[in-house]
Every structure is written in structure tokens, then in C-alpha cells.
Length: 282
Image 1 (cartoon, rainbow, N blue to C red):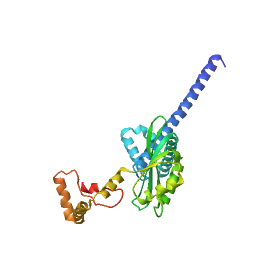
Image 2: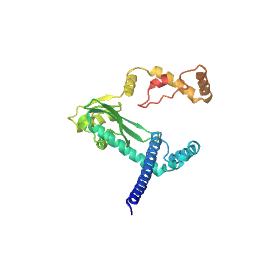
Image 3: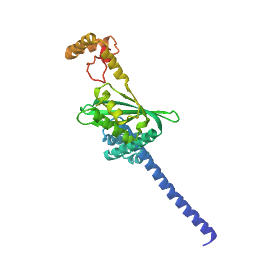
């Protein structure tokens, strides 16, 4: 084989190798983009509280739109996996990543505060929600939802304290860094012996955390300190009269609409900690 033939043979082999490398590179790029798109859709499904099976519906819509706008790219859209099982695994991976980021942030906190509240969801299951706010050595403030814990059975202070401890242990929050805890005014939270406040001070006597009421419940305490019963009783009776009669209720809503009122209806007054009587007055 002459030198020229050997040179031609080497160039041909180099071109084939380059072509194969570009092919695999292109395939990997498409697969990475499809995986990224799958994570984006799964994140939005979870963020908007949609059913996990909606991913298949979203993919069907994407393919139909692709047929109209860019039919030559349909094969790329076909590679986006959005089955129920895939969406579930994507959401679990996102959850682990966000938890890891939050743990990393918490590890940098020099001081932090906790806001917590306990109330029932639509299934009458007591839920304890913890929010954390902290500042690092660069004075950067971070505020996030730390965790939500379900309370089975009663909501005594000991059970709230136990879930509080387990929630902080999961996120590796140092107790020594907590300098403020904000709660509502319920006895199971503020009780000095068997309430959360008392149990916290008993288990961590060296921690001088400041306990405060949250803003909403400060309004509730203010309302309970004032003699609003005569006014509130009249308003509640008027609201109940309007809402209990279908014809009167419809006529009242039509009246509010005719005068272009800021409010379109009246609210029932419920004696629970997280609602304010001010909403009914408005």
C-alpha cells in the first residue's frame, strides 16, 4: 500500500470515528434534554397539586402541539417520559434534592427562629407545620417551610414536642442555634408545665429561646381582651340570617354586585384560632 493510499485510509477512518462520536453525543444531548423536561413537568405537577397521572395527559398535549408547530421534532418529544411511575420517581428525587439543599443551608446558620402552628386539614387530621428562618455569617437570611408532621390521636403538648424534636432531628437543626419560637396561644402550646413551652424549657434548660405569639393570634388575643360581644353577636346573627335563607342570600349577592362592592359575599364566623372576626366585620 502506497503512502497516499495509507493517508486516504487514515482520513476515512478518522471521519467514521468522528461521525460515530457525534452521533452518540447528539443522542446523549437529546436524552439529557428529555430527562430535564421530564423533571420540569413533574415539578409543576407537584407544585400545583395535580394528579400524578396528569403527566401522560401533558405529554399527549405536547405531541399534538408538536404536530402543528414542529413535526420534524416529534421524535424528541416522544422520548420525554411522563408516566405515573416516572413522575413519582422524579418528584421523590426533587424532594431529596430540596431537602439536601435546606440541610446545607441550615448547617450554615448562626442564629435561627422557628414558627409553628397546629391545625386540622380537610380530613380532620391534626397537622403541625414548622417554618424556619435563619441568618448565616454573611448576614444572608433564609426562610423556608421546614417540615409538616401529622399528629395521630390527641394534640397534647407532649405529642407536639415529640414531633417538633423529630422534625428538627431530620433537618439536623442545632437546638443551641434556636433563639426564638413563635406559636399560637393554645394551652397545648403555651402551657408552662405540660404544654410545648414548658416541655421545651424542661428539656433544654440552658436554651433561653424567646417565645412569641404570631401576628394572627395577637389579633385574636386583642379581640378577646376587648368587649366586642355585643357588636359581634349582632353581626353574626345578621350574617347567619342572610346565609341561611337561599333567596335572601342570592338577593344580597345581587345587591353587592349592583353597587360594585369590593366583597361579593358574606363569611360565616367560626370560632377557630386561625380565623379572625375582622373578616366577618368587613
